Structures are given as structure tokens and as C-alpha cells.
Length: 212
Image 1: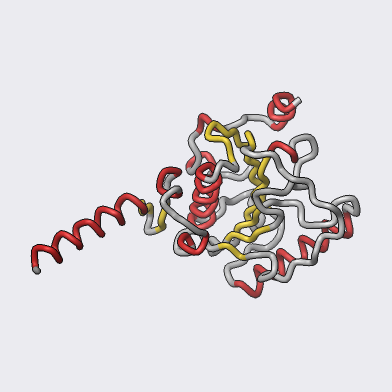
Image 2: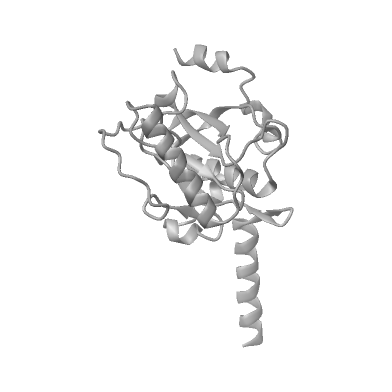
């Protein structure tokens, strides 16, 4: 009995090592690990999604355009707002961003980003994986737009935001929403520390030129 119990504990330990990698106390998981999960419910301990109904999104009034996947680009932005770390304040910021998009860009009747990431690492679903975003003219139909909530002109986002961003990208690759050889563009400090530098596009014009 003791031998069986020891064997069982060893197997569980091996499974844990395979599925999770800890960096600075935060869990990362890789593309291969993501394939082991059968449903979104099973990844809640790693990726914490906030659905549109949870942050009380307004329904879009225009027909949505389906995003052709896997996309070759991931575009990383900041929201230009205050940072947030709690649901109440983060929900409010995301709702205000949606309202700004609707009032300022009447041809895009919804929030422009596919996903937004709060200071505590929660992932807000904007347009999601399957809908064309409205964040970058010229490449919306070929990219996933991710916005880190906060203003990062002279500082970097925290480790929790970066970790969620990386995990979200890996999850998108595993589900074939993002191309394995994707390129990314970002003006946020520190992104290169969390995404392999070979994926970096040095200039926005380079990305636009390659998309034509």
C-alpha cells in the first residue's frame, strides 16, 4: 500500500513539473503544456479570463468580422489609463475604454482590443480570438491586439502582467489562433525579456510593409 501511494505521489509530481514552470513565483506554461487542458475551466489557475458579460460589456451593434487564424502578428499596447489591480476598478476602466471606442470611432462599435490584461494578471476578453480587432489600421485582419492596462511610457508593466501576456500568447499558439512563427510589435519597455527576441519587429512600418 505504501509503495502504491509513493508511486502515485511520484506520478503526480512529474505531471506537475511537466504542466507548470515557475518564474519568480509565477506560473508559466508552454505551448505543449496547453494542449493537455481539455477545457477553459481547467486553465483557470493559470489564465484567469474575465468574460464580456462579467465586465458588463455593451453589446456590439455592428456585424462582427471573423478573424482568419492563425494570425502572423501579435501587437502589444498599453491603454494609456491608470493601472488597476482589483476587479471593480479594472472592470470600470475596460468599460470606459469600450465607451471611448464607441463614441470616438462610430464605425467600430466595440472595444478595439482582442484582450486586455490588468495589473493583477486577469485577462479581459475584448473581441477575443475569433473577431477582427480595431486597434491597428492595416493589420487588424492579421493580428491579435493585446493591451496591458496602465500607462507605460517611462516604466515597465509588472511581472504579473508580463506573465499573463506570455501565457496568453502560448495558449493562442496551442489552440492555433496564433502562428508558431508569429512576429510581434510593441513599444512597451521590457517585452523582449518575456518573448523570444527573434519574434520582434523593430519598426511599425516594417510590419505594415510585410502585410501588404
